[in-house]
Length: 51
Image (tube, rainbow, N blue to C red; front, side, top):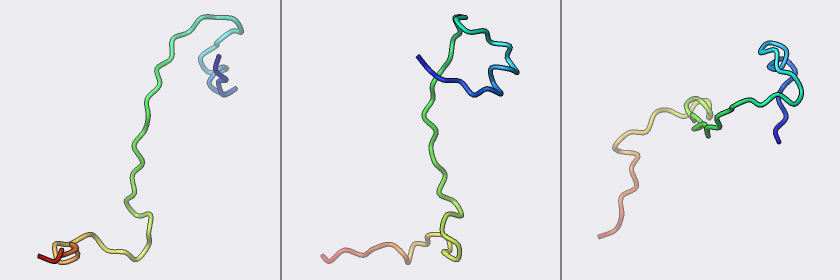
């Protein structure tokens, strides 16, 4: 059982008890712009390991 938003139910004219098909997809979060003032990653920013 799932709960659908009222706006979706109204726009798609879905009735209670009606059988519908839904697909579920996990969205990937985009981190671009999440930290203001942090520039793009550069090669010199890469962590150098000790040999």
